Image (cartoon, rainbow, N blue to C red; front, side):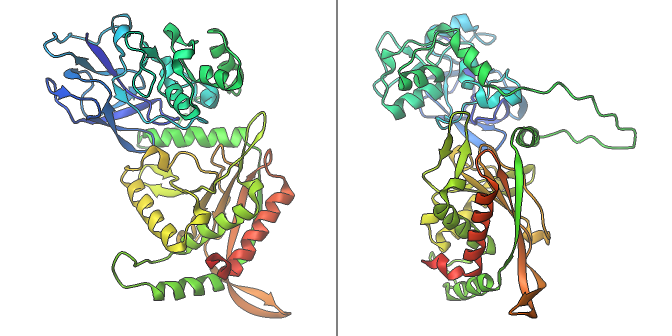
Length: 452
């Protein structure tokens, strides 16, 4: 039976994307695991794999088409010898045969994908985008295939069940057509059982209040309109959400970095000129390491706010702001406190290079417990950054500048950079924020501790 290939939700913030190009042609056979298309999301360009076998009967969305909504049909998969329909099969016709024919990277269990029809402000409290699909996905393999009675389950719920060791066959779904969705897995973990009506009600109750539409802006001066890219729209939405819903406060300190610069110079001088062991440390590499050590020593800052509890992260995963042509992205250095300076430097160079070409994988920029934004290379004297939700803090690093300082009662010259930490007051109180920044200052001004 002909089934739809749907535009997948490849990140928690994705509501639409661009079909960059098809890697299969009409009439070409498709096997499970074959890469069939490239999709440009709000963060990166990702490959999409098929999960079923068949023939790509019809391409509904051409290469380069932008603004394709999540769960919108982009192609039709048919069986060998089956007639190709002239249009996308309806949801009712496609329901028995698993219409979602692409394997989308599922977001982490703690993050729900954004439904195509949901307002941006409700994204954090909504269920998986797959829940809004016109027909359910089918769980296959991994012990969840029941033969003729296949299990209808959203991609996020399937991933959560696998990680928690839950038998999907023992669950009754509360989603459309009995589909198992995120709230069913959460209920199984807590021992409760939601009704079909409870799922959307719970999502609606968890959604933060939204503001009414703002008045349209009238521009009378001569101008040129540059359409907003997908990533620019996401940045705008998330930053407005962050400033409206997170109570920011700011802590600044001047930090002398002459010893840090000397250590960097000495280490770079010891690096081989070429070969796999060669490295070239930047100031930012040392800042990442110093922040990671500080977070390990003061773990209460490495946390996120939820309505019921403060989530304390076990690993020190640091998001680092990288400027890209369309805006900003924050690739993550995982377990930065456990890595050496050379390893951090090599990883950061690789992440930044792939970020600028849109080749990051979702897990490389989704998550993180703390962010760093460094604008020192632009000569910025001081700035305050906006918190990257759901994190509780971001460190803004300005340029190192020669300034007059007083040492032992006498005037001297030192290289000083101003660091400002933006903090979520729901998680971190003023004294704790000041304690963290003072500990960071001590490490940077005595950088030999980075080598321990």
